[in-house]
Structures are given as C-alpha cells and as structure tokens.
Length: 349
Ligand code: NAI
Image: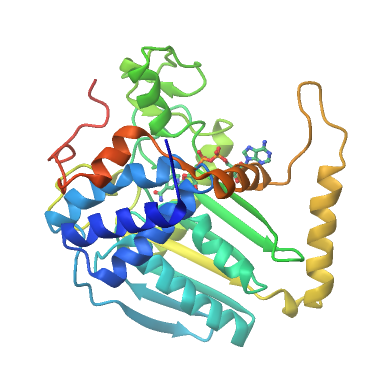
C-alpha cells in the first residue's frame, strides 16, 4: 500500500514515543527512517520500527542519553552517544563535523557507543547539502565471513559518500560491504526461493543456494570487499576504542543492553582545494557525463550513483511511499512490540 510521507513520519514518531523514546529523538529517528523508505531503501525504513520499539522499551536504547561532544583537536572530535538512538547520535556528530569543516576545512568526528543508525547516506547527504563532501562508515553486527573463512567476523559495515553538484543535487553512494543484505536472505526464505551462490555460505563456509542453510554472508568482490569491511571496522571501531570484529554486539542479543557501536564521519570542505562553484560545476558535469554514456544491452540509461533511488523517490513523492501492509498494520495498531526480537538467532530457520 501507499502512504504519504507525513503520515508515515507521524506514525513512526508516535510509535517510538509510546515505546519510551524522548520525543525529540523520535522525531530524528522517524526522519532518518522515512528518508530511507522515501528512496526505496525499505530494509532501513519503517520495517525496523518494531525492533527499535522493543529495544527502547527494554532500555537497550537509552531513552535519556547524555550526548556529549568532545573536541579532540582542531579538526577532530568524539560524540559520546551514551547508547542512545544511533540515528540521533550520528546526526549530532554530523552537525559538529559540518561546523568544524566549515571552520577548519576538514573534520573527522567519531560516534562512540551508539545504537543502530540506519541508512547512513542520511548523514553524508546532510554534508553535501551544505556544499561539503561527506563520507561515513559504521559498524554492524558480525555476520560476514572474511575471505577464505568459514566463520563470521565482520559486520555488513556500510560506506557512504556524497558530493554536491549544482541545483541542490548530489552524487550519493551508500552500500553495505556484502553482496546482499541479510533482509534479502529472509525474503528468499519467506518465498521458499533459492539464492544465487554468490550471496552467502553454510556452516562449513561453502557457498549455498539454500537460504535456510545460510550461516554467514559473503563480502562483495571476495578479498576486496573483505578489505573494505576491515577498513570500516578499524575506522569506526578500533580507532574509537570500541569492541571490534566479532566482538561487536549482535542486533538481537540481549535487548536490555546498549550496543556500543561506532561510526565515523569525515567531512571535507572543497574550498580548501578548489573554488566551490568550480567543484559543484564539475560534479554536475560528472553526473551528466555518466548519464550520456552509451547504455549496455538491457539498460536504458547509465545512472550516477544514487540516481536510481532518485527515480524511486520521485514516484513516491507523487504517489505516496510503498509500505508492506503488515508494517502499516503494526504502525497503526495499539501494540508497542510483540517480543519478537529478543534473543532471536538471525541464522535460525
Ligand atoms: P544497494 O546495493 O541497494 O546500493 C548500493 C549503491 O549502489 C547505492 O548508492 C545505489 O544508489 C547504487 N546503485 C544501485 N543501483 C544503481 C544503478 N542502477 N545505477 C547507479 N547506482 C546504483 O545498497 P545496499 O548495499 O543494499 O545498502 C542499503 C542500505 O543499507 C544503505 O543505506 C546502507 O547505509 C544501509 N546499511 C546500514 C547498516 C547499518 O548498520 N547502519 C548496515 C548495512 C547497510
């Protein structure tokens, strides 16, 4: 079914507030989730609300966190997240990074001890909207085998990058470092469909096409995606003195405990290198150049990174955001959560 952006935002905000989240924080979380749904990134939109609501109600997301920004140098700092909602902590850290990069030319701001922060292009696109280049990485729960390994070590550790062009447009690239998100395995299970053998491995570390046998996901492009996942974990975990590798907390383990996750934003002011108008003109040229590349057989057009989501966004803006009926029914119900996530084994059938 389709719902308006405003209705979806209101429903999410109300549900999270009822679960116990501070009203101002619920407003930010709703904005980040609706940002994702409005671009068709449904894996990081309203479908997460029930999980967040359960974790908030069980105090595994701190309802009254003491956020604290510590400047650690002229161009660096740490936002102490106190295990509050990750979306809010990462957003505050981006506020600080934007201000700092405008002042000193560059900013590296870590977020320490936060909960899940959603689709992280939300934060990099905020930098681009201020004529800055945004880069962000964050940790997630271990469910990815290192190249050649039969056991999970890293998370799906996403990387996002955004650079401003003209007329409020930007190139926005945002990806997990795995071939497919965990949600795609669950989707295949629900439809009893097989999966391509490039997605995941079974308990022996062998590629599997049976979604019910999946015990870990595969990194993108073998050792290269493995290396990128490692880089994310070093920047967002080891660098900040947080748990790293397979010691990163699981999304579903003990919903009464904070997750202590890390994220790192890097913001660059293009003015340090080139005139901003020249930079934005050139980014727009890159976008146009890519659009004008001859399409390969089977393709209508080459999109610049993120443009595929702009196409979805334009449709949703005109016709409402597509939401799964069950999610809408949950959002409009009186239930806060159904105890569906506590101690859930993500790999259990
Ligand atoms: P994806 O595979 O759907 O897209 C990856 C990138 O490729 C996007 O920038 C997209 O715009 C671009 N792209 C896709 N098709 C394209 C096309 N035809 N032409 C041009 N560009 C194209 O994304 P993925 O890996 O499934 O990640 C989804 C979301 O999950 C992201 O927002 C990410 O931040 C989020 N995530 C968050 C985590 C967390 O713990 N907070 C963990 C893992 C992912």
